[in-house]
Length: 135
Picture 1 (tube, rainbow, N blue to C red):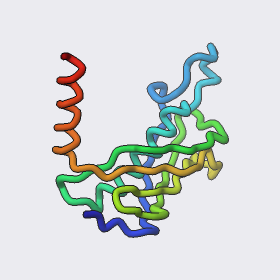
Picture 2: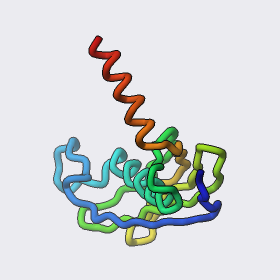
Picture 3: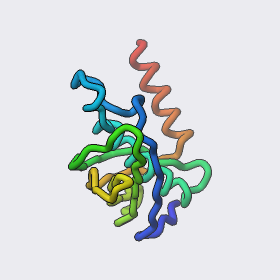
Picture 4: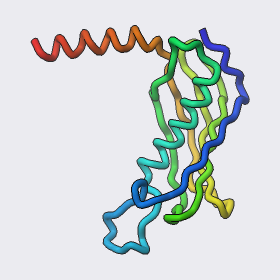
């Protein structure tokens, strides 16, 4: 099913813009990368790493996130997201994830787990769920 090697690593970069920054503090100078976007990019990096090693009919979905947001990333700076496979257990892939800004400061780190799915079967189950919800 999956041949995802333990120790495999992927990095992706993001330019922090207003679209991924908080805006609820009321001051433009206080806008930084939001926690949900940081976690989303950690998940995306892990997903893309797993996908490199899966058959075309397969993909992954997030099943667990345990992440600390430790520092702020300024608008206009680049953040590097890193995912490393720490273990593969049947249909579960576990990752160490982190985010580091362009100054080398660690913004966040933690663990993430993704479940391997057959996309067509997953879609069929969702169709069944929708049909039950409408009944």
